[in-house]
Length: 481
Ligand SMILES: *Cc1c(COP(=O)(O)O)cnc(C)c1O
Image 1: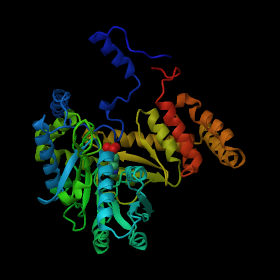
Image 2 (image 1 turned 135 degrees about the horizontal axis):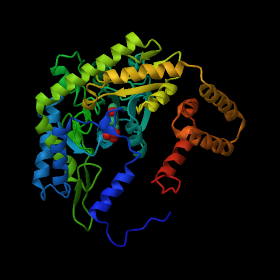
Image 3 (image 1 turned 90 degrees about the vertical axis):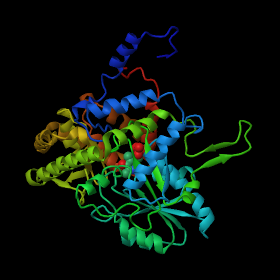
Image 4 (image 1 turned 180 degrees about the vertical axis):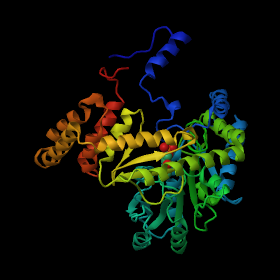
């Protein structure tokens, strides 16, 4: 298929028709039968936030002098985030396009800090194995060495392993509040003591927690100290496009002081286009996400965020309690105290459970190390706990049943494990491709995920994923749209 620019522009109604066709296979997120991806505060708030996005969509925060409105909004958003996270007046930050960019900037700032303040010529970043991949993504791209710190059986950063790795090279420690995979808050106070003793930086990644933990605290939920309240925390990230309920493309990165923040800025003084200074990774920055984030914070307000946080929290407790009391096959990993968690099983294949949930219309993320499923609630899920639990019970019951399909999958998995040892890369890759695209309308994925976790960490898997990404960003005649 050869795609070209339409000679004559389509009419508005034709465009709308195309939208309808293109979105046919998208998840119907308003049903709320998914976790993560979309954070929805209800139609009334959403409508105003959407309006802000559209109204400011043409504006550009590249040059603050041209659109002082955006500069003012951004600074106010940063101040609000700083005050929610117990930052004092010294705490400084920026808005970015998302968690990944916030993390990228914090890693860059740490690298600049190390250049000036660390005797070692080989600065090192220590990052918990459960921390978001964005840290390694950033560090790899700027050749900042990094080492993984283990987590304990509760999925918290292992303090003993951290201590063992505290050499004079360490510039930067990364912890999460909470982590994305299991929703666990690392022991921030203990980690901060170590960071202070070794005079290194400590980043707390509150991308997912930053705009819900403060409100849960206000609602008297027992949340351990995790933010700038803890002496030793030097930077933080918090996503507005998650529990801030802002439009996508909005996050904040915060630093203990403005000096540290300077390390994330970029300046080029000898460009013929003029003296170029840019606060973050992006050049042109759309005004839409900034205005939408400012609008979400101001329209929802403390009262609205607290109410939503409380309701989401109660729905999460309901689901966790029901799993514990009614579904003995499943176990919740660690002790997640916020509004996300993961569950695994010692007796059944949770990937099969995910497949059965898919048959019932649910989209749930599959995780590995260990094999588990991911539950991450937001306001759209309030009132849906009972439906989910009922469907989960059905899914578990079906996954337990001895079925031919199950047997087939398991046999395939066993065969794959054996073949992996015997085939060369090329043969194996051909086989796995056929395998992952195969049968059941591609809906049943348990066997494929079983295979993936078998290959976890190997070069073969990395190649498979690269190939997959390559295919995804090509026009494919076989795709339906
Ligand atoms: C979502 C998330 C990120 C990355 O944020 P993006 O907006 O997807 O780039 C980083 N850390 C944690 C803990 C997250 O939940």
